[in-house]
Length: 469
Ligand SMILES: *Cc1c(COP(=O)(O)O)cnc(C)c1O
Image (tube, rainbow, N blue to C red; front, side, top):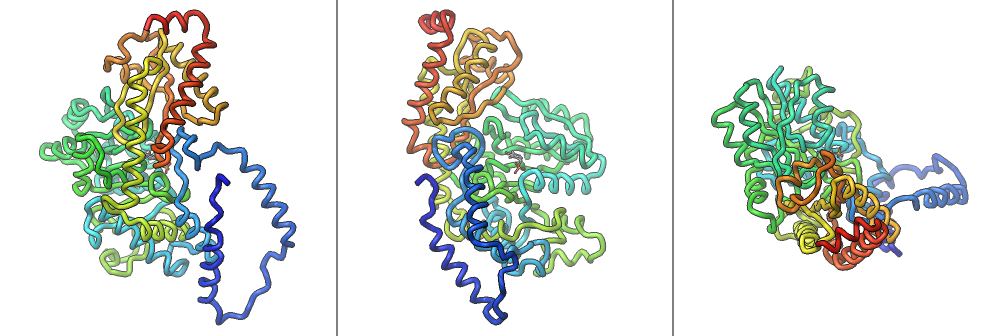
């Protein structure tokens, strides 16, 4: 079976152990006395509806940024749901709040922040985590501009508009990274309070030049917020190229950082994380409690979070995952990420060696974007959409991304394309699962077959072009 149910016996035993903690109470009749047969009927109906999904758990899903949770996370989350703790306050979740603090301290340590001197918590996701970081930034530097690259996540401009903070986009260069010359220009114009640095952009996995951006702080006074919602965990791997490795080596120098355990951290959705280097910024969250509250060891998570109710189950799942797979270089978790990166590199090499494709960017992490070669950008875009459909019909699920012509024009591989439009629709594969590496040959074979079918169908001009290659 494609979905793993072998571990359900463990869940049952864990629930029995959990129930032992409440044995002093009189037994309860079920609060919702629906007949088991009714429950089953509805659940089977749900199962039928849920079949209408792409197979995210399978390596043949090689499209969007989706990765299945680890079995331990799934089990711990389900187990916690029998309590359903609320990590707003200790009243709502005693153990799960402690677990949140411990898990977040481990993530902070991964980035090089002292485990006992930082301020951080989990959020419902990366958008909320970034919102908190930019809210703190704007409170510390009222009226000042927040800037992020044009390849930064689209939510930054929306977040700043929600918060009423002035925002400007910095150009991206041919590799999808923040353009330093343009950033310097904006800094010279003054009034930049915060630079958002993306380690792993969502569309191409590009890594902004963090060391060079930090060096600019010698001449200009600004905060650095790192958005590594997708890329943060690559801090742990040993097979990055030089540029990315140098950037990840500097994470301890930044003011705040975001990572999404629900992206590369093997967690169910609803788990982002924001960490501030200076615990004193916790005071900003508070209206009436003394500042000292935040340096006490009795941190109350609800007092340092913009969200009120938060799923304690998320913290429990994350804690359990980190218990099983500690966040250390060389560990099993890190090896899984290295393997995903390896899959990305191998896929890229195959694309580069094959005349049917154009792969403009050597992947920095595990995202690969590639176009189908054609005479014109519009024809290549149409072909990408056809290959997307044809591959799906053969059980291989890819994603589409529209990229600016600039990304291709400046690299030799795109030089022979007739740019009849300013952007190009490409295929995009986030090769986030270690199994993508094991299944690389099968993935490649289906892609090749789907592409041949589309090119074959595309008629005389397409095949003339292929013969000319
Ligand atoms: C996914 C992502 C976000 C948004 O995070 P959500 O968890 O989807 O809200 C922000 N920034 C980057 C770089 C991302 O990849």
